Length: 400
Image (tube, one colour):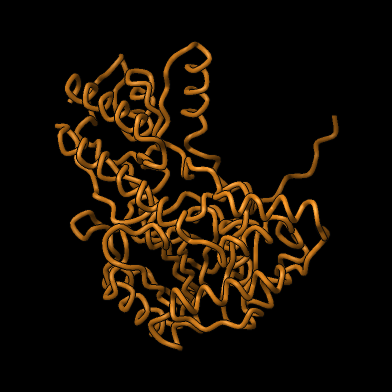
């Protein structure tokens, strides 16, 4: 056989999901009839509110359902601009908004628009798993700022400055954070803004969990000054707050040249986001917001259930989240122990043993550059949380 030419060098760097093996094992155990509980999902377990679903059905029946402009329906971009003005005190023209196939797609567009080969993008660990891979896909180099639990995993100015070189192009921030649930306070945002201005850096601000804050309030870094707004690409969407993960509607808001470039990139990659979902997203942003308040209340109740249970379990520590719907649990006390003939060396080996013994599927912290931790999601029902925390307690009493 004649050998084929080699594949893309750039994309050979892309890592597969670190959780695939655990998910495969969880599926195998379920096929065996085992009662495996999953705390790995990053999506609300509620259904999309009825008014939003009904709007989609009406649109399907009435049409039109063809292509829209590549950056999205002008009505939806206007709704986003109105939302940013009302909620975030930010003024954007609809032309500065690009509607994408989820916030992940908006992040991808932003990095494609910003990066040249060899540019460096700073990501703050613990970080969302897709940041480094999307940076590499844009031909850039991820540079990781390690944060410390004693600082509540907030970036420190000295450490941030130490990472910056002549190649640094942008900083990605995520508040509220996936995976830590940390909400960046105003002084941290101010510090990041000062550093970005001093070194002429862009800021990519991932605000997808904005509506899910339980202590304090959300502030977008773009709202701190007109100068910071000019260098910020704000990323958000309807997936988390409105239980619309599968509808795939996200958006970016940025200065006009960036918005124009991201629109052009998207026009050749995917064209417009799903037309029917765009119409549903208008209803989400402009319609009755009471279901969103109800979702937040249910997540807050689940957070309290999980944290209260964790307070009662010895052998572990955890980070109390103030936003999003995740809890990071410190399992480093298990490192070096042998359980089920398996030596626990890292978060992956712990998760494998934990799944086999406790029948709980969680995400290993190494996926977020936090190998001493595992991530639980409380975007699930209360009964699952109750059973899962009891299994964790039994596991810890047996092996901690």
